[in-house]
Image (cartoon, rainbow, N blue to C red; front, side, top):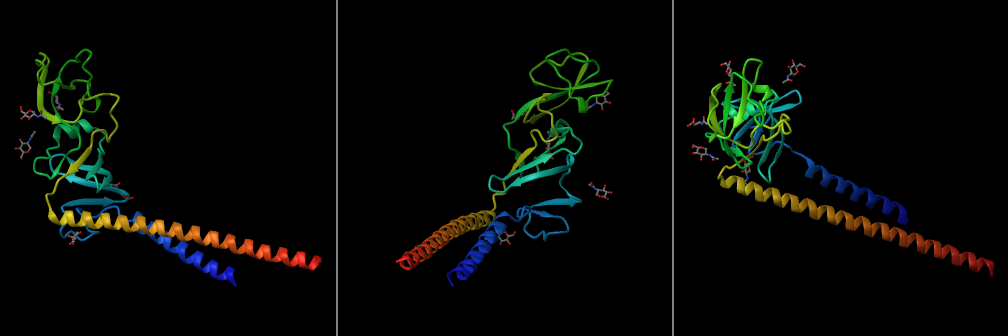
Length: 234
Ligand SMILES: *[C@@H]1O[C@H](CO)[C@@H](O)[C@H](O)[C@H]1NC(C)=O
Ligand SMILES: *[C@@H]1O[C@H](CO)[C@@H](O)[C@H](O)[C@H]1NC(C)=O
Ligand SMILES: *[C@@H]1O[C@H](CO)[C@@H](O)[C@H](O)[C@H]1NC(C)=O
Ligand SMILES: *[C@@H]1O[C@H](CO)[C@@H](O)[C@H](O)[C@H]1NC(C)=O
Ligand SMILES: *[C@@H]1O[C@H](CO)[C@@H](O)[C@H](O)[C@H]1NC(C)=O
């Protein structure tokens, strides 16, 4: 009699625990972002494009960047350059008219375009250079060498380094909306998180209780059987 009830309760609570997990793990793209053509855009501030399995965001000053991930609570968006050249992004991306800014502390650097290779410690940026010209990031205070022309001076997160040259290095932006609606949604989201945490804790407690009841019941059954055996012996 006890066993079937135990099984049903066990099943119900396992099920509700997994529902909590699913609701907590779900949507990746939501306000303030939306996917063009797939999600309604009312109230959304940023449009993302999804093609095949890649998600991209378009910046008029540069073009498309890949969206690696978004962290809504820290307001970070992790991007990557599909053309594998973060320094071309740094050189061209103008965030002035967007709500985005680099996550990192910025420093002004001058991009130089030189007809001859500069000697160490200058290291050319391979993806911006060619056999006939060499591009460098240098401190704007340095005098421009004779064989070079300054392309532009921009505030960027990192100067070029061959050790930090993967396609996502430095491409982490944060956004600022000054929007009361977002505050409300954040509060709602954190309530959801709290509910999920409380739900999981309740599930665990109930499971532990059920398991200990089950152990207790089978121990009692065992004791009863043992006593009956002892009685039968006499
Ligand atoms: C998506 O897939 C189609 C067909 O498989 C292909 O032609 C297209 O280039 C792909 N687009 C991207 C962005 O990978
Ligand atoms: C970025 O764009 C703004 C507005 O269009 C412009 O005023 C500014 O000069 C640009 N910055 C750079 C570094 O090009
Ligand atoms: C970069 O230089 C410009 C012009 O001199 C200046 O306005 C800006 O504050 C500098 N940015 C940083 C991050 O130092
Ligand atoms: C550097 O200069 C060369 C020749 O003057 C030009 O073709 C090239 O586009 C320039 N590169 C950059 C990144 O400005
Ligand atoms: C949260 O954002 C949605 C749009 O995604 C909006 O419809 C809703 O009103 C917002 N919620 C609050 C509490 O402001």
